[in-house]
Image 1 (cartoon, rainbow over the protein chains, first blue to last red):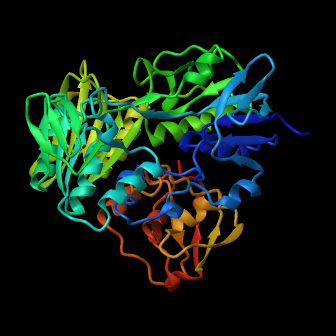
Image 2: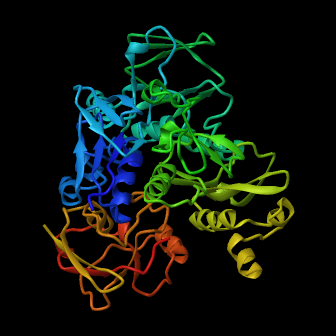
Image 3: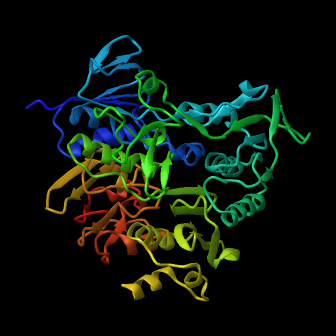
Length: 405
Length: 107
């Protein structure tokens, strides 16, 4: 039996995972994985870490070696875009006008950096692809002491700032919100990260926007002018939903999918950065940009194509490396109304337990991997931890669970 | 290139050439060897690239750091004396011929 044909649009972490999981789960039909970059599918997280620092090359980033795709019957199409999908005829149309027919189509189109809506945005570099990282590396190559301005204090901006500081440049991070990483972590964790950056000599300005960028200068909305040899922005992304929208699928800040990651067309799934899905953990629709989300959803989509009726329920988790800080978050802490900090912030090892209506919704582990892993387990399994229990002197998450078990 | 042998839980051996300075985890993942998941891609964040180093091993291995040590308490399969996270074992010529056994599951 030849098996059904699957076309995966987008060859990032999510798209690649769908293809790999399909083969691992025994799918026998043709699989075509179409990406618009020259590089074979690769991991993006090291772009703001080891790759940027020059500690690894592209070979160290790729998700599978080239021979894997041939060996597993996965047709990898590089440097190519899908520009249209004809759902009646069940064909994907490529940029070169060639068409590929499908039984199942998967949108894993990812996201693109949100453009800066200010004069001089053309002087600003982004950091999303290996080509972006190469361009930045080239600007920094062989130099020290450059003035680097980072617009946006999210994961990307802060990780970038940490690496560039280690490369001995002068770094200023400008964050328009009152807190860095506001979407991702609590005020406590954010403050410790800011302190860590400042102790390394990075300047962090919050509550200040960027008004304009000119050759060599960044003008802030409060009137400050920063000298800048290099300006890099990380102010969030826009999901790549245009092709899905033109194909008549529902789109609203992401391609809308149900808890099985299926669009309104049962032959089309969407996942990863480009998909907005019904999440039990978020209590509604959410779009997540993370490796965990891309890979776990990839496994779910592959299983769905293979006939599984299991919904996607994986607990979200994230990590970030900045200097020697490993920040790991389990669950979604956004929307918490109370936090309890456990451990010793002064020593740089602590966890922030985040509660909403006295229910634990997430844990931010700052150099405390045990709390992160324990936290994932108890958040997956349902938990009865209250702020009062966690706030007791000497509380230890592992010990508390051993007692409970 | 150094050769690393991966033994699956049901005893199937796969020998792979691993590039210098890649990790034992990368050697498995790049070649699509099942049995090592590596959810976090090598960030010592997830504990899903657990291996048992062959008990007869005489090759020198990297020292275990605190994060790895802590993560190993949370692997899906039991931690043993020879447990390691394969993302934390870089491969050089010195590890040529290393044999690692994969646990029954990683998740």
